[in-house]
Image 1 (cartoon, helix red, strand yellow):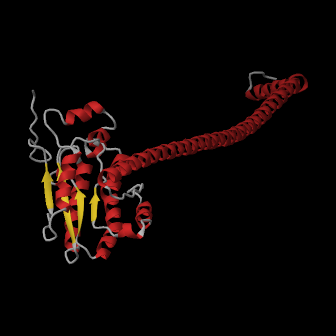
Image 2 (cartoon, one colour):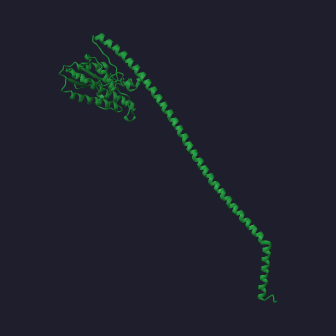
Image 3 (cartoon, one colour):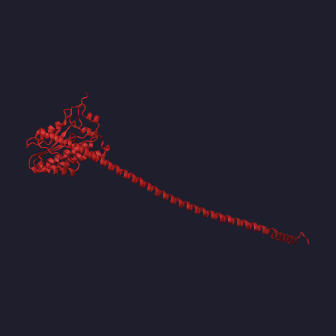
Length: 336
């Protein structure tokens, strides 16, 4: 056999391949396949472990989200309960403070009313002794219509024959720009100077008309009702209202026997400025420094003159100021 011949080479190559294949099959194939199988099993186990870990992670995430949601819900409940408790405490504290405040106000009002009654009783005794006249006193808040109406209606019959009404209740609180005013101060001025004025007139005028006698209504206004001044917007507005009401009342009562006079004082040294500056005596005194002001007696004398005029004479409007005051704004004060 010629080993160099191609057929011989093919034979021997085939033989060698078969021998190697046999040897591999007998001695190497099984270990290789086992190794491959083990590797495949190892990979499969690793994949299964990874999938299990992924499932556990998903379950853990879900548990965490559930626990977090429960914690948030519990937190919201706790916060709501805390807010409710806080709101309840605040509300109860406010209500208690309001009750205490109302109690103190009521006590203070009772004390003031008591002092007023004592002062009025003393004044009543003084007037009755000095002028040999009979005097009756009433104590009520002009800001409350029911009090006004009830008090006027409570007058005995002979005291209901009213011929003169002096509508004098009024006050100023504060001296500042409109946009800085405390609304409770504004309310008090409006309630007293306009509403109180109206309540008194509304309750008394029918009694005056019923007498069928010549009577006089004196409405105490102010120079502030002629010209407004800075920082006095609310007070000035109320006194402009007094002028308007006086003018309208005069026209409405023109066919009756009732005169209506608007008296407009300028600087009058009374408790007016102390009330305006809420008890600050220094500020109150400064208002009248450098000028000789009017006093309550001066306005009383003016009103006495008006109400004692002959029946045919009606003074519709009168301004009364100190010597060195021209109007609500122009005042000359000495620096000496």
